[in-house]
Length: 339
Length: 275
Image 1 (cartoon, rainbow over the protein chains, first blue to last red):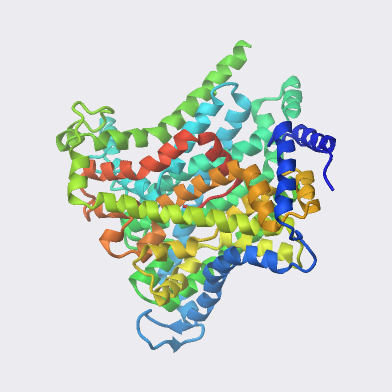
Image 2: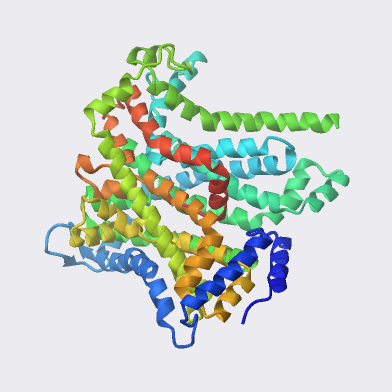
């Protein structure tokens, strides 16, 4: 049995009407012919009732890797967090919940949580609020150059965080760096950015911000341009101000993407912190730049207290899970919508 | 008309400011890498070196196994990108064209791994890799990254966009699964597969943290990891050399981005990508 040519043409028109211009009509016909030829050589039934082994074979590589290297560690962390261990010695002592108790009662715990919250505030400002406003400008307040701005603003997102770290170490260098020269030109003395308790968090937040800004911007931009033009025009005819346009049309219409970006800004932002902190401060000054993510590295690979590292990992997972639940709901909605 | 053009001008200033902040560090990195030591400290802000010199690059080339670093990075990023693409295509194919029980549950479980933080996998994966004896080898970096949840998600989306009649035709002709995949589906989703491959490559190329845990020998370093050597305890003074390595590290991703930015931005737009 063959598909009629007309039917294929119809399908192609339909697909093109929906904006799925994957193929020209001729190409569709060509593919239909290819299918016929392929079938002549290969008579195995596709998706037959008894062929459950086929999807299993296709799914095994990805499933195996992701379960072994993502879910299995989660279980192992729970187990490790009940033990006292230095990662090397063969002796592993079961201590129950001791690691967790020591963790929440330690003096540094307050510091870690404060720093984490401070990081989140900086990251939300630079990587959520700012791109949100700028993407609104680019999509609805400007008529030209939007493409240029998008390309230029996105460029740093393709650069390694390691490059960003070393680059900004030089830019923020308090003795001879370009920023200190600019500051001294207006009569200010450059602070020692990476040695001051709160400043160090802000500066590292800005380094992450520089890299992630463009990425979040295009995510938000894609939601902004999806807002129906008729709505915007109708509002314009009613003499709505830019602010009213933003508040009453854009914010509600882009809320699901905005929520998504809000969550990934926090969830991934805190993980990006690993790179500049490891390269530039090692958590210092006096644990002033560490956070819930970096502390796991410190306990695991600097202090060699594996049990505590695992306990911190579980704690971070619990906190993340709250965001993930929010996030999964949003993503599910998006997936559903796209179908 | 007049008012709207003034208003637009206002926003353009804001956006040009943002572009300046985003691009100036990159230009600064490039220009510093071509400055001599004297010029770096005496005309720091000068955007174009008065006398461009290659000294920094020559120094790195002579004193560090730079070609080795480039090869290491290329090897790791290439294998990871290729493998992520292959495993994602296979899994997405199963999710789109087969019916089996718990399909949605499995898909969600795989997708969720994208959001498991690195803190959780850090210690256990390190222990597992050490047991497998691949620490301090490129394979230790590659092994945990052979598959990617977002890759499965995005390729599944691309496959779903293929018009159903084409697939039905294949089924009616009794085309085998492998033929369906390689002869019919892959040619249709080739653009998104290539774009995704490039994005995976860029992300692995830029990766710093996992190589840091796994690779100890300096000869096995990747480029981002090598950068760490140019930071001295006091903040360093060899800025020209550090910037030269930074430029070399950023060049491949930036060139890939410049050459096919529409594709790449589109792929990034659909996804959330770590690294």
